[in-house]
Image (cartoon, rainbow, N blue to C red; front, side, top):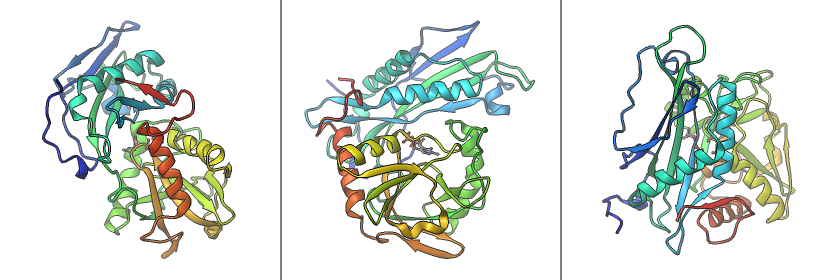
Length: 341
Ligand code: PLP
Ligand code: COI
């Protein structure tokens, strides 16, 4: 019998909610311990832990969904496991085997089943795996010990309103660089983005869009999501860049646009002064899902795509297809869904 939780499932946002159990495992002397689930949501770290001083930290984000028939499923968890390994390699941290990563996510979801939003509520259970370099060592070098933890929380829309258009502004700041860590999901990228987000939020924008750090002429991505545009001749285009996060949602949409919607798709340079080519645009990511972009402000001018209030038809179709797979209403491509229960 699953315990009952008093949560307003239909009105969840993206705020921290403590759930019952999280997974915790330590790496020491060259190996991971067996790991365990714990009720304690406070981490105990040495004051000279490299994650605190030098940012030796990476994380992931994925979701579990309740299906119509009461099952629970994860979306493309193997891709998150592989991207986590890539982030670990970049920061000289010990990798978690893909199978262990997936099992930790499954264990955490099962242990917190009561927090999984019901089918049809619009919510899901967000899973946040993290790795930290710990152990006291003050020199700039990789940590001698590591901690891997996975917690989860029920969430609704990341951008207010979910499938309602939001406006973004172009930032003068850079978030990351090629040969830096732009392609990895490491905390430092997000620390660097806080000021740009703050400026955008104070001006009334949902977030900012970054341009490429070398020429400031090409769209990179949104602070917490990738960018895509639908051209007037019905092509799905998304920026190619060595300094953006390889979004699992973006690659899923590239596949669905091509194979389900029958569109031409490509990853290519998207120049900021060529936005007129798009009839629709959106931000995509695990938290953002698909958030339609009403307009983007650049040099004090708001470029509106489809509409500031209405969702374009292709964006709508992509959203419906993606969500239907995530919720188990239709079958996804082989390997996209992992059953928890
Ligand atoms: N870009 C950034 C900077 C992100 O934080 C995220 C979120 O994970 C994404 C893109 C979207 O990636 P994904 O679709 O794998 O969640
Ligand atoms: C995600 O979509 O999983 C993210 O990590 C984006 C944001 C919450 C940082």
